[in-house]
Length: 80
Image (cartoon, rainbow, N blue to C red; front, side, top):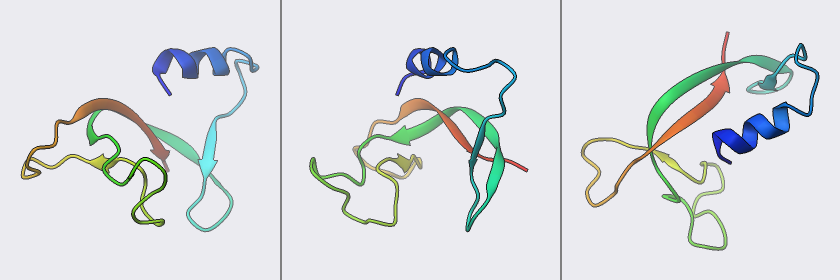
């Protein structure tokens, strides 16, 4: 999803509605927005399914990753 697509979806909702994410083991948490996070897209994806069910489809980029070009992404996660 792109920023424009997210804004389009959010514009359909009341502007004072809270935005939350699922908590670690239940409940909900406030969000934390991380901008320009370096991510390797589809690092855990073989085209049909994830290699590891417990990991996300994309991976955080580390400088020692060889051959992988990072993409700059916005990451929305659990806040305080």
